[in-house]
Amino acid sequence: MRNKYRKADGEVYSVTDFVPGQEITIYKRRFLVVDADDFTKKLYPSLLPAGAEAAALAVGERAKAVLGKVRDGLRRRGIHGIHGLGRTFRRVDLEGDRGLSEHELQDGFRLCGVILEASDVSDLFNAFDKNANGRICFDEFLGALRGPMNHRRLALCHAAFDVLDVTGDGEVKLDDIVTKYDFSQNERVLSGEQSVMEAAEDFVAQWDTLKKDGIITREEFVDYCKGVSASIDSDDYFQLVMKKAWRI
Image (cartoon, rainbow, N blue to C red; front, top):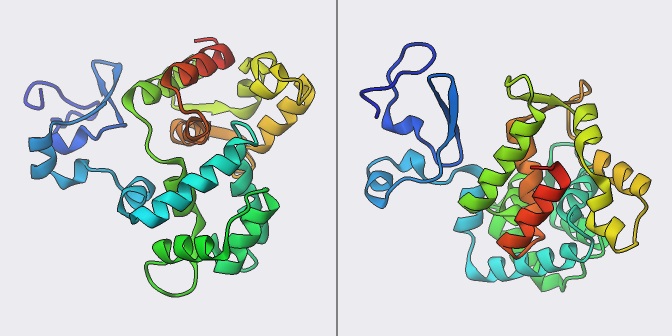
């Protein structure tokens, strides 16, 4: 394929362009790269998970067990639990550097109703404090908490964004997303915990990390979906949630 097809700028595709989870465009059609074979991954390490997803794979078993406790605690807060934790982290980040001390990490958990033993918090903090400087990057931590999505779920996220991105430029407005999201199918509305209006307000609050222009990129949308995915165990149920919410 790499010797046959070219990018929009005329350059020939190379193996390193086919990164799992990314999109490529061939003859004006977009394709999602879902995976690479093991032999290719060994030859090209750049195809392996990077950033937050790599961090999720790198932590020890003890830290993974504590991350599981955090996910369970947030799951009880609904599908937006991880996004709520992100907002809380930004509030308790006293230095404003998108980092957290161990005390701030514990405060963030407590404010979100996630109760952990002090030893659990310490073990988790130390696993992410790679530089031993007493602070961890909460974006990396949240990425590890979300974890990678399997190909089936990732494809659903991209399908939902394609429905929203009517111009095909890779960007959508938050206002447009709100008008297209079916809040009547929100799990907390269906359970009677929230009204449709409350669910809408909660949904908008999930995007408070955006620039003031209210523009959402495909990458930001997929990150949002990863937070939803982390709160849902079943692939079939995740598919049902996505199809009902985004009408795909």
